[in-house]
Length: 106
Image: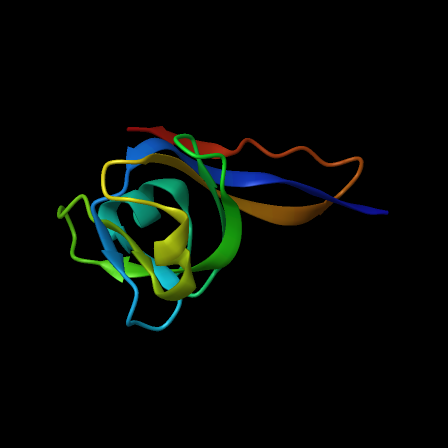
């Protein structure tokens, strides 16, 4: 049987931009993506620590070293600049396998 487990997490990162008039997604500094193994266009879950909002969208690259976390489209309504969020990606493994998630504490 397959189970869903945490694969990657960017922990307590501040939202730097919100862009309502944009295709829905989340732009993430390329360094953050590389450190956690989150791929462009991969499904991500975002948990807002300031207001409790939770959403599912997809990741795309922001400029390397920019520290950008941009909530775009409908996701822009779920966060404000400065809110702290957790960005998580999950994967499927066999229940007898183990995985060591890549976690980036910002």
